[in-house]
Image (cartoon, rainbow, N blue to C red; front, top):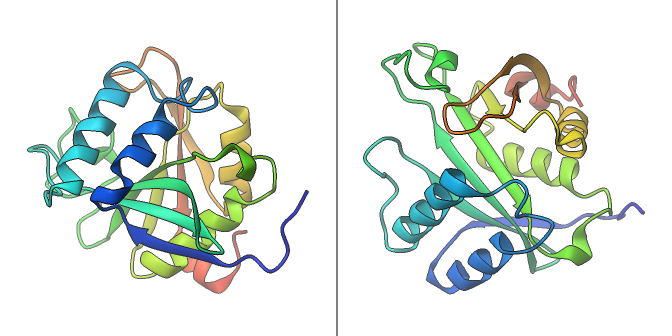
Length: 188
């Protein structure tokens, strides 16, 4: 089922969102994708962010809430890939001097918003609203998460490399979205 007249809004996570996001991370439809070290990192960064810190000693990040018609339903995490290049970092491979590359991760926390064709629209709206200045956006879904890969392709991301992240034994896709193409409407 599609949702006509989509009215998304995006804001940074604050303390009042902490319990909501923690609850979303415990939901059955989210747990297969946020677990072990990845979940621990997400919770640590969330705690830091709601307490006014956007750097964990390794990288900077921002956390966001997406709402549809003023109802919060999704959690988005972004991080600018800062140089200099470090070959030990899975994401620094995509760093380019003079270009802004932003990593994205997200989840839809509210079950009532699943299966409504919102995710790709939300991603495009979020990137156009908050990252129109960036050069490219990267995202790295697990290869087995075919639904997410499909949604990201609908949003305009292209698969560029299959890889094994250091903290996960299963293969992932590195996917890239060219923001200029999104701005011109030529990649979605």
